[in-house]
Length: 141
Image (cartoon, rainbow, N blue to C red; front, side, top):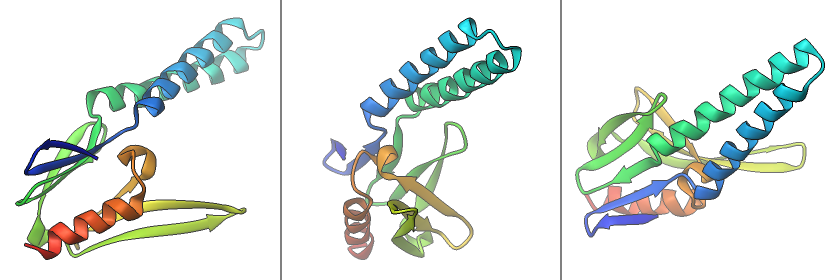
């Protein structure tokens, strides 16, 4: 969590995730250049472009969630933003999924019309902590 000023809190993509995606994109591009198989070249090139696009999105729109006294702003689509007033927020919870011995969490912000999901790597913080902060601010409104 980063505080822009005393009235605004922000959660942004972890820098290590941005660097990791950029490095992975370069590795896929190198693999595409050295692959003797045309299908392997195509597959590696598509992976390089896809992971590279995700890295660019993280650089262009690093803040995934911003909160102030009036409401919150979430990233929507590739790098767009959606402003949500506090009175539009119906539920804030953490969705926990267990599969194949792994546990994953997503912060869920439900407005009744839309549900916004954010993971811990997008927030650079545990989803439970972010949910508790949002609930505290929401309940104080």
